[in-house]
Length: 73
Image (tube, rainbow, N blue to C red):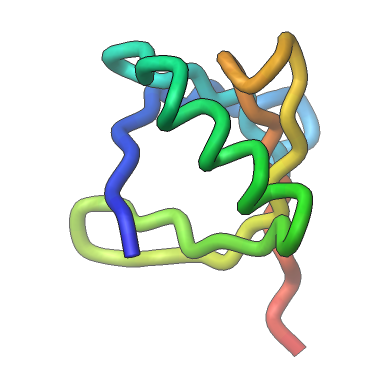
């Protein structure tokens, strides 16, 4: 539905990332993203040639996200 560029940094446990928007979104995009996360926090994070399902949790407002990999069944 939307592409939102982020800069992700892995945490020590390797299944979580801290993600910052690059460039920072404007106010209306942040509000829309907050509504999406509140209604369903599961997203697909695409890399160059692969993708992974993640659960997004906002912190620092919606300026940054914590992304946790959802394990495959």
